[in-house]
Image (cartoon, rainbow, N blue to C red; front, side, top):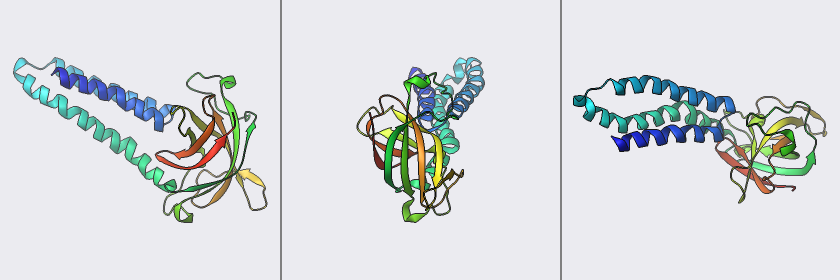
Length: 214
């Protein structure tokens, strides 16, 4: 019984932590709300059981975390895995990397980090999906991230501005979804710890490398 309770507690803590790495702030919040809803249903049921039913409840305590994980995987992990497939095996040809100013439309940060604690890096890159296109899937360049290679694994750069570059070198506002090879100029908001070698991440797919300035 105690072991089962510990397993449930560990799962309830681990699921939001995993979700926070791959989902937006609102997505993580939705996961937490779903967990609270499950607790609101399960706890009253557990309180109302009789001693005769404890054996059944103990068995359920081991089954419930597995059910919770299957639900989490079905509704959150599997969609992200399918989205990741669009850029799994992609290549990144980096043309230029330089510090830049904060874009006028840069979002405010839900973690309370001030603008002064982040720096902005402009990355000029051509991204080519495996096979030159993403097949029947498309990808959103605004969902691209930068993550450290061999450094602080928690340091992550977020795309706050994306511009599409044509063959003549002219910029235009990037479309929400792309399927083929595209040259992009992306402004990433990076924490102080994210310097040196980094790679691109699109949900679960990682590809390419870029050398970030200090």
